[in-house]
Structure formats: C-alpha cells, structure tokens
Image (tube, rainbow, N blue to C red; front, side, top):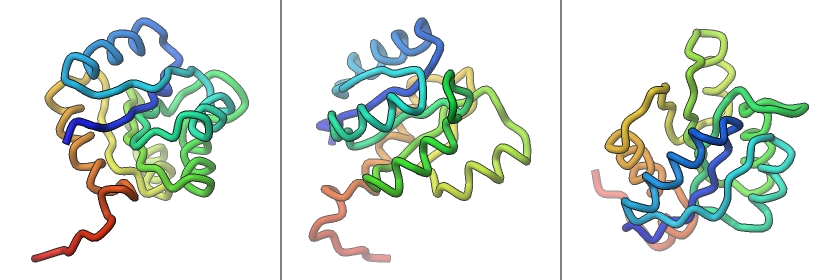
Length: 134
C-alpha cells in the first residue's frame, strides 16, 4: 500500500526536507514541496498527489486551512494537517475541512506513516470497487 504520492505543504524548509527524507525512506513518493497556499493549489493540479501533508501556518495570502478548503473543492484530495498550532479555535476551523488527520508537531515517523495509511483509504483510487464490511 506504499504506492502513494504525497505533496508536502510546509513553509519551514528544513522541516519539509526532513519530512521528505523520512517519507521516501518509508517508501512514499514525494511529488513536491511548497511553502504557501497559492503554490500548493497549483502544485496539486500539476502533480495530482494522493495525499497532502499541510501545515496550517503558511507564508502568503492564505493559510493552510483555506488552502485545504480550496483543494478539497477543486480536487477532493485527503489532507493531513501537520501543525504546532493546537487550540480550540484552530481545531474548529480545521475540522470544517474534513481533514484525514491532524498531527501536532513534533511528530514521529510512525505517527505520520499511520495517518497516511488511514488517509490512503479515503483517496478516490482506493475507494473504487471497495465494499465496506462492518
């Protein structure tokens, strides 16, 4: 189940590169890194990732929550928030975008790997012809 393309949206370049390295070591394909919402929307259209790892605080005109809303409306791609911001107001705003996950920094590779695997179940290609047995 590792054939998953990931876009990283993180404005701290050292953290983004570290995350990219961790993901590639696990076996994921990182299709790009960007640090602002406008570029994230553009790169999503260009690279067609399966999952997006999104920081909430970004450089530029729009934050990660607004970026996620626009991406969900345009492409319906699952987003996992990676953020150091955790308060009720931010969590309430983020919840309205129906994220596939919300991980607070500092994070560990096991937590990210688990969140990605769960989010992968929400991708359109994984939902095709799948029956849900409860």
